Image (cartoon, rainbow, N blue to C red; front, side, top):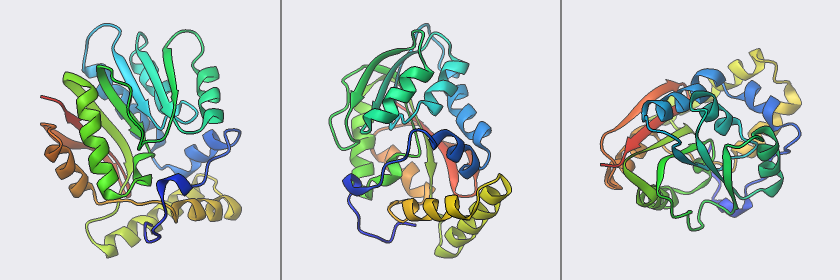
Length: 229
């Protein structure tokens, strides 16, 4: 749902107190999607890898990475300080080495990082903004480094996008999302600027990633990745 020409800076913020439960109800195959990101980072190998989490929120994705790579060194990056505070509390005990309060259009920490990860944040950017971010992500990765994005995507046609939206609602309601929560989700999604998966894989390749691939897909949710040569 990306019809509205809304700036990334105007997208509404989540409530850190309710975010985690809403995410689990509103993201089908939550454990598979989030867990696959951690698995990809783990398969990179190496001791104490440095990982940048873009749009880190309350640390749900970072926690999945820590579960797969206990000695990871995390840099959390998000525009919402209250969300980052919850992430730091969740991840207390050592893995968080740095925190940056900034939006995705801002300069990235220089790294170099072994991996850059993100979950359900980059779709707030318009398409040129996504392509620019992909290039900037490549620049802060080590050679051989991984970029992996858990993302909400459009279908290749408008008809398939509508089917994915219908699937999403059915699955969210089956997971316990009520009318009020779903209506709030629709209001937030009206600000989204999603793009088809195939386009985003092409943009990764254009930014210098090779290979690129979709690792997991469930309706409108996908985990895709690219490696810096």
